[in-house]
Length: 215
Image (cartoon, rainbow, N blue to C red):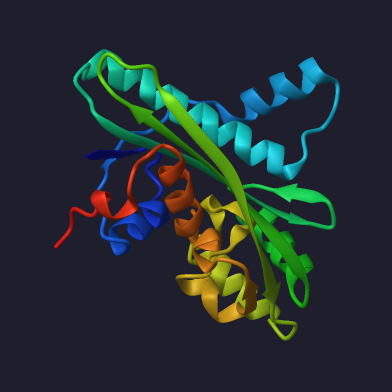
């Protein structure tokens, strides 16, 4: 069975590979900020973090499914969409993009604990059959060391790693040394909860072990 990851995230790709799955990858054509702004304007409220990541995960999967059907009508498999946001004190933190924002976040996060929310959407696609979708949000708490120095923050930000990841940190690379505790499925913090993906696949009558395609 084919597996398509609706993401170009190196971390999500690495997770699936470590789990025995070599997926195809497609970049979803979703303007994340515009999607969130449109839904919040239509509903007249601010989306909760769990709603935020779930909405974007589903939109990303749906976008890739639509293009797959146009490009490859015979596609038979699953499409996986995901999105992550870090929340601390009720503030939702996506990718910082700039060094100044990343530095400010790390200055505020040291010695504290936040929640990483990860949205997952899995779509079963088969020729001549209606699509079936299962989705869920996984969460994990992340506690940062209190003794992180300004020079360590500056060096980490200068590495460029935190600029394009949710919350401005990683747990599986350079940022891991500054994280003291993770409570919950650790793969959630990397980018996707593998245990959650397995459950969603089962809801779609897809056995996780049948997706293994790496020796």
